[in-house]
Image (tube, rainbow, N blue to C red; front, side, top):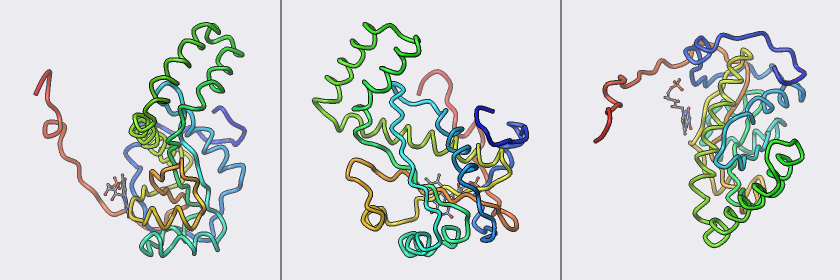
Length: 213
Ligand SMILES: Cc1cc2nc3c(=O)[nH]c(=O)nc-3n(C[C@H](O)[C@H](O)[C@H](O)COP(=O)(O)O)c2cc1C
């Protein structure tokens, strides 16, 4: 593990089979800040387009903040019961971080400076002229990190539920979310109580085409 909090080794196949959306949590279970940071450390190992890492997190931990979120999230009780709610946000201007990120790549000796300069200029041209080209990319990266966060939580014996059932405009207003950050989803994280609702999957044959449509 890359971070300080000790996490017992979890079997990957068990983690992906045992992750379910849990909608009831033990409200007395509180994650420490160290545990939250450790979870996010694992989540941010997720891949992203051009490694621009446009994910931003708003961690909602205080009970008062969760209560404020409750009506915005259609009174779904998991937002007040779970230890934290992580709002995953996509920075629609994430391409502006290129110089910072690639600069560190150079500092670490992972890329020559000339290559980084050319790459940064190309990105600035492509997205700078039409910033909306980046929006979809930022949202895709937001989806990837959300999944990684949920699996990292499960590997720690915690549970989650991805949530799109909330009023994004009201959320942005209530939590002063800056205009460049678009909510991707809310993810309550905590100690689940009871069983998850069972769900089914379409078969591989139903969702897969080989070679060409
Ligand atoms: C983008 C997205 C939004 C979702 N929104 C909600 C939600 O608002 N409330 C909820 O209870 N579950 C929500 N879910 C959970 C799905 O219902 C759940 O993932 C699906 O039924 C499959 O069940 P499983 O996660 O237990 O495998 C959402 C899932 C995704 C991926």
